[in-house]
Length: 292
Image 1 (tube, one colour):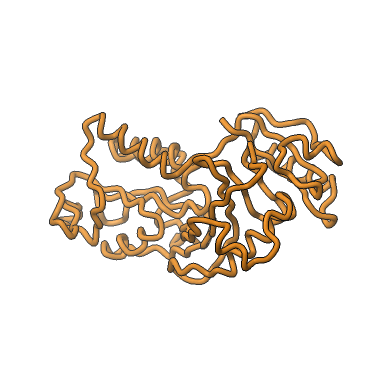
Image 2 (cartoon, rainbow, N blue to C red):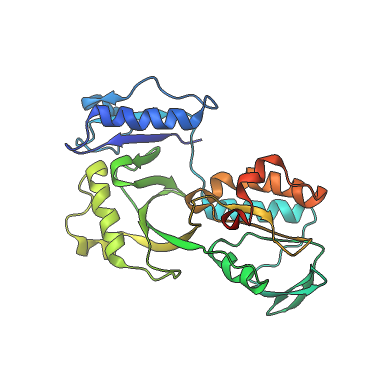
């Protein structure tokens, strides 16, 4: 898998600052994967990836970390499910539920009802509306992020994290995907071009002057995108049975860590769905924790 680099890139950040980032990541890793002993400083920092600019003065390499292509991941997951006999309803929007005596008995869609024995609402920002239709709304807020693709020369070989600018560049599908920002402007998908420009400008500290004028970005970049990451007020997701329903569950509010935490969320929640007993690990993520 590709590795990731975290680097400092301007005079306001010293090697000591980079070491601080390394210490935080080492604590988060908790010994579960190898971390470097120290950062690389000075001109040697650029040797970790040829795409890094001379402005980068400190960096470190985490072997084994990688990047997921979300489109390829979605396709692969769908193909694996279909191969296992699971019926996948594509391009089908769920707009409500049929309920009977505290149970969800069917999903309501534009193509008719789909009977179900249990339902898991894991629809990102759309989870709020779906849960609201069950009378159990959640105060989800969209933390909007932006990204775009660009062909760079040289292109990054690794995923590059730009710690102090809160941005990232990832090699995906033969190009470089650059993303960042955390915009709180309501639950919508309106794209603010100024945010795209801000991310691009931030990346030049690390990747060099790959464009001269922001007006050039219109022709240089492809597929500008904005999406809302679902956040709850306390920053933790909800992974629990929906109160008042025996067979409805929610898994949402993972913020920027949806793909990262998806596998363990699915593992623990499937245990809950099949046994009816909440795993101890899910206790902090109760639906009603804010009302206690």
